[in-house]
Amino acid sequence: MADRVEITFAKLASPGTGSAVVLTDQSLKLGARSAALDEAAGGRFARAATAAKFKGKALKSLQLLSPAGVDLDRIVFVGLGDPAKLTPQDWLKLGGTIASLVGGASDVTVMLERPDGEKVSGSEAADVALGIKLRAYSFEKYKTKKDDDEAPKSRRFTIATANAAAAEKAWIAASAVAEGVAFARDLVNEPANALGPVEFADQLKALSKLGVDVKVLGEADLRKLKMGSLLSVSQGSDRPPRVVVMRWRGAKDKTKPVAFVGKGVVFDTGGISMKPAAGMEDMKGDMGGAAAVSGLMRTLALRQAKVNAVGIVGLVENMPDGKATRPGDVVTSMSGQTIEVLNTDAEGRLVLADLLTYVQKQDDPVAMIDLATLTGAILVALGNFHAGLFCNNDGLSQELLSAGLETGEKVWRMPLGPDYDKLIDSKVADMKNIGGRFAGATTGAQFIQRFVEKDTPWAHLDVAGTAMGSPASEINQSWGSGWGVRLLDEFVRARFEKKG
Ligand code: BES
Ligand code: MN
Ligand code: ZN
Image (cartoon, rainbow, N blue to C red; front, side, top):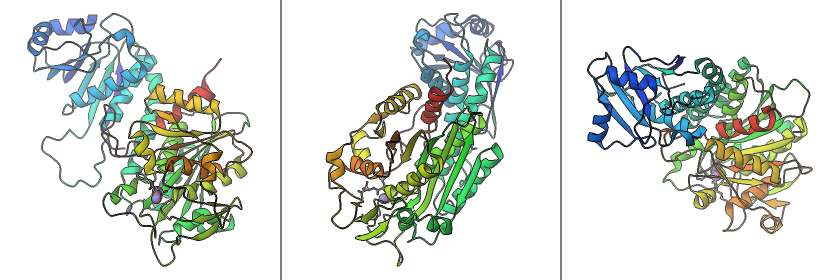
């Protein structure tokens, strides 16, 4: 993982050396220990705040460099706004902001003390640490030249808090989330020449060390299973497809698993219906759904989640070639339903179709959630700020909407229905793989829904706008965002792990 950040927790005390981060509010109050540190450093905070017009607003900051009277490089004062109103997301953003403020420092102590005297909980402290980790991530694998003013090789953050033991405990789970997100980001950022279906599958095999049962299906297996829909996408590529099934059984009982399904198109040229050149490089991220599912499985295993879950990803490359699928070709899916492929660039749904059939047959899941960078249309509708949610079950939909608000990985529900479904009826086969000009994200979802059997609760998340290329934020500076790992981890916690 590329963040070079080490987190430790300690009891609340002023640091002797390095950099200190101190929290304040809109009345520029400091907690008792923080006030003592300011006093030891000459009591400059109030005057410096006035000089800099620093008002303690949320995530605003004031730096005192080489303060007199103490052996510190700097004291950074960070505003909380109103400390009584802070949500888990606010603590996360605070962590991210702290990591950005002290970018060049190698030894940072965060005095995690509320100015109003209230205690910071263990989970809030862990959220700060998670924010630091997520913000510090960067993908530098292919940079051979280093900048002079670059951040040091490794950075140590000590979170000083009244609840150090509780924080340490909460950090076990939160650091698993950090690792899962970083794993997903790495996979999305990796260029397609380095990450083909085989290389992707190889990375997932390593999850077996964490106790995940990993099964890799090769081309011959997929043929035997009659996954004609998925295979029609990969047949134009020199690189063979893989389907990887990851099973985590963390619930002791034999309850049915929840299934997570990911589109893993390692590169999408569009195939014979080829995409224009401008921006095509972004299609190395067309496996963002598969990356999120992979990151989630890693997180669930690392934190020993009490859930039975199956993750399945379809790894293919969509290329034009003498062997590639032509527009007008008819293929037969594993479900037996036939598909007229009118546009080879609408390939994600062809991959998901066979994955859904397989996982329903093999695992009989209680619910299925698929993630896919499926359509440009969802970007037109929602931009980078929500993923599109398509769902056949109001309860499941509500759970995902709530998890979105809790984590900040927000989803917005979009319509499904028979009027839209009709748009993908085909004259020559059971269905065609594109609708008309309008409602492109919904016709994509309707196509996938035709592979949901027996009304299994199912949700489709169109992550084309969120998995990659989102604007930088407090907790993400990376092109590949790892979107979905935190959302689905929260979904799992809320549905399967909350008592009472
Ligand atoms: N991978 C693309 C969708 C996409 C677009 C993802 C932009 C991320 C950013 C998908 O395979 C695709 O090409 N969809 C087509 C569907 C159309 C042919 C019905 C699209 O959105 O144009
Ligand atoms: Mn495409
Ligand atoms: Zn695609």
